[in-house]
Length: 105
Image 1 (tube, rainbow, N blue to C red):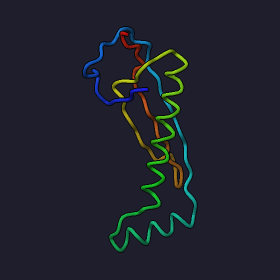
Image 2: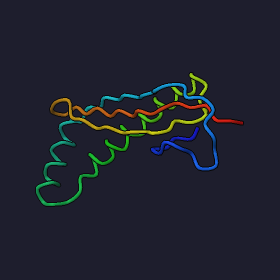
Image 3: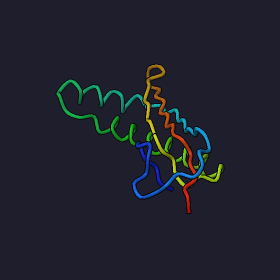
Image 4: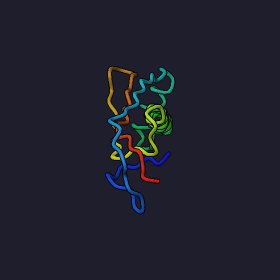
């Protein structure tokens, strides 16, 4: 399945727009990781724990979005947008949204 942030696919022609698909993931962070990330932030380094949590959320949301597109019979998802929000202390939501399309054969 092709997944892209662009609204067109080079060398491919879109036959049918099947609709908007999305994937949502809510992740919690644990207290130890939060504490260590806080220390890392104080001394000016990058927080690997949070970076990996963001990557996990992104991957899971995209996978869920792709699964919904497959159920619609899509060949690709175009115009993909990723959103990350903090719901409350220790909770994060990642949303992947795009348009499922069928390509011309």
